Image (tube, rainbow, N blue to C red):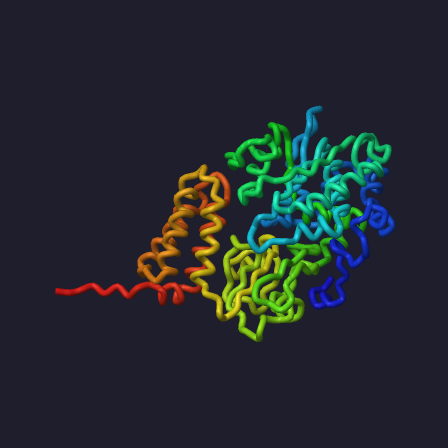
Length: 431
């Protein structure tokens, strides 16, 4: 679909169908057709390898932030050895500014379940664990109801649809910490341990949950899988951006008139999302900045977004990332120093403390920014902050240190004049 046709786009992940969360309604609208198609043709067209290759050819990239090719990730799983194998479906969704997966849990949970089951078939998975942040209590209940209904219908359990596939799916309530969204911390939490990230290698595909092969996929990522099976890789790859195709859930928030979750293809112009979809800036204010994909993605100035599209390649060219497509729009009255301090406060609070550069670095970032915020900072503090970012990036077991450093680095470099104006003018006396 050409990007110019976005106004006629009909949602696929969250279609406007009443009561789609109910399994009977989902089935009447083609639900579980993809799973049936795969299992009924598992010895011919839809072998496990062919399912993986179809997802790979479609170009589906992870919707959880990293943007890695999903089918390629599946192919990293070793051949079955008779032991248990797992999928950990990541619904932790603790990144500030991100609120898309809960829409799937509420309005179309069976699409996710179907996608997870197809992925389980393709990788010879024995159990799927859905890890949902503890604060999402009502959404946990909604998903559990959908899972229970799928068990009753024979889509989950022993001998699924008479295919010989045995699969269980468990909904796991998360531990309420941002670090649990990191894939190895998530696995540690599932095992009942403190959520410390693991050193890699070994990677989850080699040694994951309880030491067994594991693949971690985002909820929205797995929800795309039935679309690919039903319509084909070529159809899917033709939608949106060439190197980052398919539908995506945009979470629009901030100082805009119509915040919410909106589904379109990738490759949407940021200006269209702001002016046409979100109804423009609130109270007629001017746009000052955009955080395009959750709080850890590099901020963009208003003068950087013209002609920029929401896909990995386009955003990379202007020095940012697609992330989770949680787009935060900030107006001209935003105190950018206070905004950045709030972000650093969050990452300092959420650091697990395992790695010294992160444990100490996040604290120093917050402390120095609070000093500047209160008007006690000096110009040299800005360079110290940037040096701290360098000492943190790429020096820890997981990427939380990077997630904390990137907002500081790019907000200071792109809005330095505002930070300098809040610093004291240090005058050195001369003899």
